[in-house]
Length: 222
Image 1 (tube, helix red, strand yellow):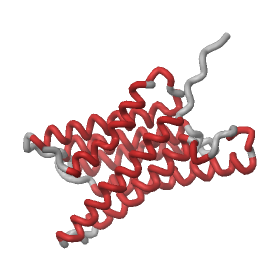
Image 2 (image 1 turned 30 degrees about the horizontal axis):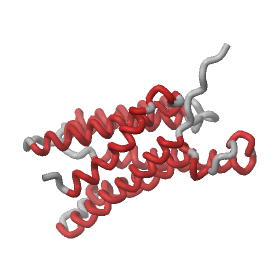
Image 3 (image 1 turned 90 degrees about the vertical axis):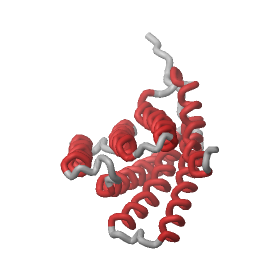
């Protein structure tokens, strides 16, 4: 029987199925985010299979968070968050890869939870999401002809950034609790775990809506 936690984790599957069904119609700048959604679906299914067969899921989860961090970073680059400082993108990319390698390979935490990396990339994702939303608000107020007629709340960039802020803010808080060792209370661990599950569902619903509103790629014309 599938547990409630597993069912809530599978809330990313509708987003992945919609993205897959409309694969040929997507605008290319959104491809890193869509790849991230597909990897999340694969990782959830793989984690469930490993768990049911009594294997640890730490290795695949640690590999997934590295891919997720890189894909989100590329997505923000595609959304021109680094437009004024393009040199920042390769620096952040290198930082993430080095930090992940040091913690997971250097410290041998590939079979455990790599909290430092999760805290760092969660914080980075939240900051970049806020920067993207600020950019969108500026376009709506000062450059309305660029934003089009669609409400900002139906803008896929806004929805993706909003979902990321909701999810990664709480994820960062949870990882900080674990890092500082404030996890000895069984009741606290259970409550944080339950809240995280529902926060994940909310973020996945927002991501699904974002995928629905992603514009189609323009047909090639001569």
